[in-house]
Image: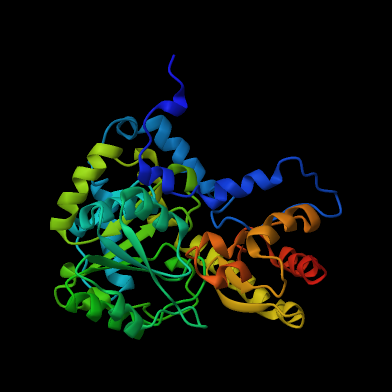
Length: 398
């Protein structure tokens, strides 16, 4: 038998860093937590609870009664789900979105990789606002695409002039996330319109990841990009059902784009998964049709936790911490210690029973700010848990 280590390995894949979520699990090995200081896990945004009982009951009914849910389906997704998304998105964005402009994917990460595979090849460039979502950066690295950091200001919003200076003949897209992961900030509609105009001027894509749109604190329309004439030429939107309905294990996402773009996306999806999860798609459809009030309650709870972060943070601010951004499932902070974040994060597991991610997971290697930053994903701790988290962080002295 040949030595597995002697088999070929793609240089691009070898250069791609491991997921920080996966890496952080290693920090728990050999660590025990006492009853009076159990682990507070604020490392991951994905809901750690099952979908609501009525949805689980519907999933069970689908599995037992709908034989088509166990077979191959259309590559671009269940027609009924595509039509429901088009209808609800048209209402939400005060625009006209057609089912043929909607594709269903195996989670939002696949929506990103699918559409990026139609936009860029090795040697091309993609502008990612920093701090960036690490899986976006990982796809760039493993695909040989250069992730060009688009810096943000103290408010964690990108600057239009900075973005314009980064665009080269190799640039294929600007990627923005709102509400942001990891920063939590909500991008103003006016800023998104300006970035849309910039992308259109340079004939590149504006890829807008709105995974957390259901937890936006604003009551008004988050943007008007779908009302732009010929938005097909510029805009691509990504979405996930993992957050709104807790369908994390069922892997259901969506993307909105020009039908001609989706024809190319279909090639990718047919090669990778053939079709999205059939039971998950039907669950998402049922959720859209029946769980609006439940989602509203989930949103209200997340907003209450966000307020708890804002109300409790002065205790940390008095010790030199800074709250850089807060919203959706995230608070992004800077710490006052000499210990770099890449060392502080595993230290916090051992000494404070807190698991979170360092800024180095979300920033370029050469950005000095990364070692002073941390991401707190608060979707899975309640307001009492947030109080306890701040109590522990306020008393540490590494």
